[in-house]
Amino acid sequence: INHNRVESLGMAIIVEEEKRRTNWFSLILVISLAGMLVALIYYLFFAPTPLIEKVISQNMQSLKELSGIKLNAESLVNNPKFQILKQYINPIEGGTTGKSDLFVK
Figure 1: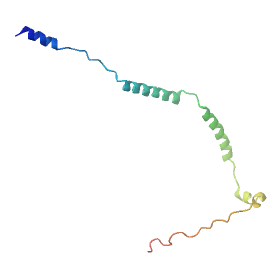
Figure 2: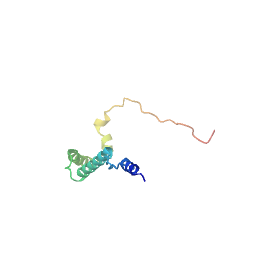
Figure 3: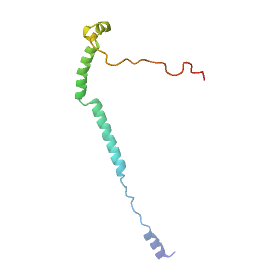
Figure 4: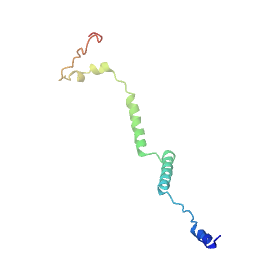
């Protein structure tokens, strides 16, 4: 065996350590998803009640009061203020539309 040849083969093999390449897209994606999850949990369970819910709850109380009012249609129609109203538009009359018997040709 030729020693020069063995030495040249030994020198031709270069062992490099593999460099770990960081996949920045995956890293940013995982961090942003974790951030969104933390924000979601905070706003669902720990955040104070928003102002809109406070305002809506007050309006709901007045809606409950309004829903308790009972209207009597007869007293409304017999009211003199209602009777002096004038009708400025002729009422629309419903006519017959389409065929009377759909199966006749």
